[in-house]
Image (tube, rainbow, N blue to C red; front, side):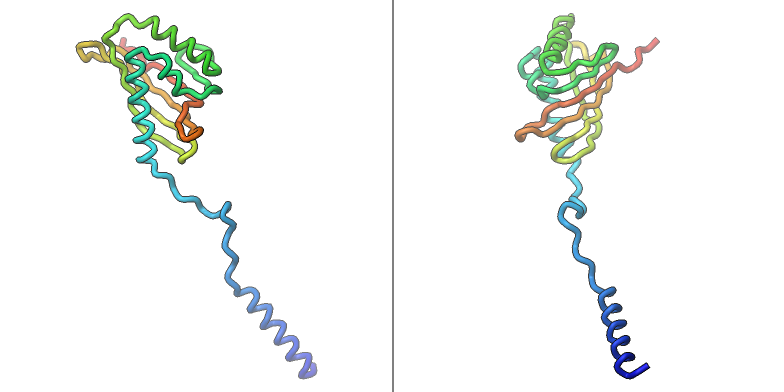
Length: 167
């Protein structure tokens, strides 16, 4: 092997080795890890909405309760077919309000946990209803999917059911 061939091969090997040692380019912004959402803050936001929802429900304020739902919401309640759309959900809520016999009953929604981010949150919660003496007359649980639309959290999906009745 001639000196020229040897130095050419050595130069190529050095360049190849140096090329392999370069720092990789940073990932595109879309691929980089996104910051973790502040779930405590999101939970507090959702609980505040649930407090307003309970207040409106206790007052039988139909307009306020229905305003918590998106137009394309789907609601799945205990022992009933799926309810699709805000108009159908409104009709179901009106029927529930009409069935309430105890005007002094107080509903409460408690957000137990949330999962998601600043755009979509899944909430896990429980519902209790107490009579005027403070006795629990109803207990249940629910999951709700909230989506932020035009800066406002709206329920897009919810499912709820009763806790087992004591025998």
